[in-house]
Length: 327
Ligand code: HEM
Ligand SMILES: *[C@@H]1O[C@H](CO)[C@@H](O)[C@H](O)[C@H]1NC(C)=O
Ligand SMILES: *[C@@H]1O[C@H](CO)[C@@H](O)[C@H](O)[C@H]1NC(C)=O
Ligand SMILES: CC(=O)N[C@H]1CO[C@H](CO)[C@@H](O)[C@@H]1O
View 1 (tube, rainbow, N blue to C red):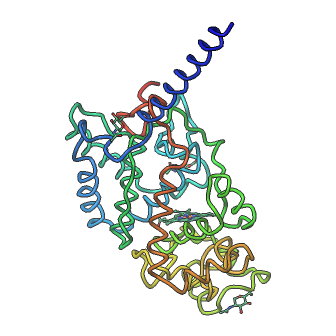
View 2: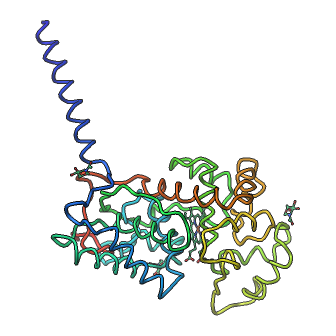
View 3: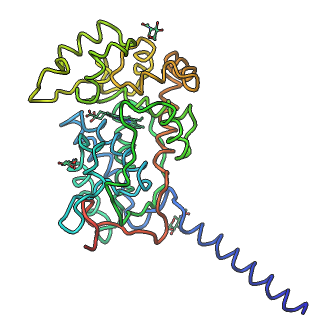
């Protein structure tokens, strides 16, 4: 009897050790590609530098792409899958994805990686995207942050699973949704700070310009936007875009928070953060300190890069980011 108990205990111990070992080998780490693709990070850096030089609007688009990838099924490059007759509705066909850009750049960086890594396809699309987003933050003047690598690519991508907040979402719901991914209200406000770079199309905010109930927009700011967008009932053939932060649209800085405090921001949900009791103190705090925001932004971007990642043998390492290896 005693020896049976001992045997069971021994087996349990072995099982625990095996679990610990496998969790060590499968966890992300900073030297994941050290032997298979030692130059991976510098290849992403130089390729992004070249792309950024040709098109400074790319870096904001990639930062947004990371958010859309990581908040749906985790950071697994499920966002980059193209529709095929076999699976006609991957994530990128969902409504919040309509204005996503930068897919070609991901292909270009992935090709640069595959052509210089030992043995071709080594670096996953999920790692490629987090590395590109890190370079984007750096190219826009933010702090460089370190990333552990070894993310695997997802083998599913479904538009119906895309549950990203709309620009007119209630902040309470957004705070709850971000909390579900592990972010505090403070961190949520920091991530909103991404809206200090890049821009939005008039269709995302034009209803606010003539809505008499939305009395929070600065009058001069509103009339500038009316010039850009036209009023609601005027039919526009085109949907112009405008910068979130017109002064420094390609700089990671705290202007976004100053705009919130001055009622000069595009999106309704962003504006609500300036007055909501759970967030207004953070908005005031970051509006008052550029240095603290810049540092925090990189910390929280690094955290965003680790949401729900696939590790070890899960998923696959895609050859081409826009399609699964099989099917
Ligand atoms: C409640 C949460 C959020 C909402 C409702 C939201 C909504 C939007 C909308 C409507 C646009 C403009 C799209 C267009 O009209 O072209 C946009 C752009 C952008 N978003 Fe967000 N966003 C949210 C959170 C985030 C987060 C967490 C990040 C990144 C950390 C982010 C990064 C960006 C960037 C960089 C752009 C500019 C893209 C470009 O210039 O191409 N957003 N967002
Ligand atoms: C990183 O992960 C890889 C793959 O699991 C493993 O081979 C390597 O030994 C790990 N490196 C370190 C420093 O943990
Ligand atoms: C911004 O809007 C709020 C709410 O309508 C108002 O209380 C505040 O005075 C406005 N601030 C500025 C700077 O216009
Ligand atoms: C970037 C991207 O793939 N956008 C797609 C979003 O969805 C619409 C329709 O569902 C497509 O037409 C876009 O190409």
